[in-house]
Length: 395
Image (cartoon, rainbow, N blue to C red):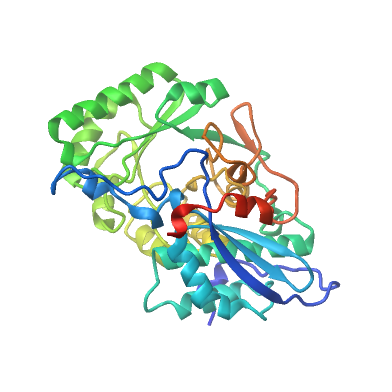
């Protein structure tokens, strides 16, 4: 059965072109940045080096990006943004593609449910769902191209013409030079760095606030490194004078009850999570416990657009905004344009981006991101571009 399908209306697609059939499915790990440390082996300074707790390997985050290419018998090709590197590609080639070849790609909900159910014993989260995400996004790209319509118009149409962007960069001067009004810093220190780490965090954020001024928006991403409720409560008190909009992922994504406590006890800023949550089922628990004040799903990790639509509806029912991780990718913009999204995170803008990454990025001008009025997700991806940027995450 199509679990959760009632969250989203059925789409009325033209039937004049005849039925489509998937003929092949391919997953390619790719490089998003011109200079990348993908595939580099770690070097640790002893058994208690804090870097050991932070080494994420080649199968997580944007360093493990994949592009899934789904071809059909009518020559319509879908390109889907996913993640999980070579591990996800193996799942697609060895498992999921056998559910797809010969199927109608327009049956997106049906195929999502079959893929998710087929991996339920080993893949409810993590790399499996990253692989599923890439496929699902490729299928939606086909749906839009088949209907000769941008995906964001197929799922309800835009609620806003343009969306204010925010840049994630350690150097605020980059964003200032590009015209951003909203900034986010990654915070490398955490509990393991002790008192000196706390002082470095406060100093770093104060420098950023001084650089951008009091009127611009400032946020921080802790990368789950604080991972202690008491530590986070203390840091929120110390940082209160700096006027943060939100503190992102201070704890492990699995510590939902910890997030609930932070939400309840911290009034000076918002506490947000969800970038590393998976599918509507994971979000159902996060929202049930009140563990976030903004939704931050990533369309290339959370289960693709099929899952993301349902996540957005669940948030809207609770009056929560959605600011997807890397929402200014052309994939993320499908939801950003159609939901209660006050900001779109940078993707490629100001980065050391490859032309492949830029081919998946939304137009940016004057501090705002805009839609592209092209069928599907509107990317400029080609087979050659994908293969030219095949990455070492295949290892």
